[in-house]
Image (cartoon, rainbow over all chains, first blue to last red; front, side, top):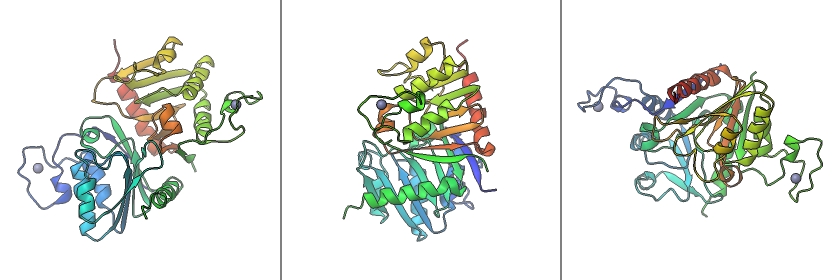
Length: 170
Length: 170
Ligand SMILES: [Zn+2]
Ligand SMILES: [Zn+2]
């Protein structure tokens, strides 16, 4: 059947350097070599081959930002949709991501754009309760579901495109 | 295949009385007879036959509270797990639900218990970005996924039981 996976948070406290640089021997003081919840989430993001569409209320997590920047430097087409009130707050990664050249739009059509989903190559859905923040990953009880089941993925693909088009600034 | 459904919010503004009382002719000024996002969510809650386990950060929505109270009055076994900081805030439905005799536990093991899921009869999972509040239902862009796929449901069943046991006040 299609890929189906559930990941619970908070993540275990451990280094995720090996997800980015498998051959590097990291010297930081955190535990190494663990496939933590965060490591699993990062691997799904880094698995993208062509496109990554991200629709999240909040995006301040530096590990997730590093993963998206890595995709961007590989030449993938990345689109980020973020809540209008969130994009500019302290610690937001939206500024650095925009300055790197990634396309970002701000949702202004609702009190809050409260989604927390991403679409990897338009066919792997990553969704749940988890905002892309440090607190959510390290401190909160959260869930992320990963699925390639078309009957779950397709509605999110359509919703992303609808919101992206609705928030075209031009 | 197994039931799979995605519901997006905000809901359309319409009366949901028909979900609770199909034979009643409601006289309120809202539009009637629409299967809105909220109506569909309420039908999933009301479909429970034996148990309902709810694990949500916030619960202030009166329609969802009415649905849970209806299940309780039918004799179903209901358990509610709520964030420790949320249970007592203004507008919370936790007080009325507790006073009706429904079992409630407060999660105190994390900065926030940020889940937003429910398990209908231990086999239908209702999860997503939607807190069970009025604002989330009526104002925010949100998603709810409903599935009976065991590989997605079982991890949530286990996580609910783990959190329920961990927050036993006795
Ligand atoms: Zn390290
Ligand atoms: Zn009415």
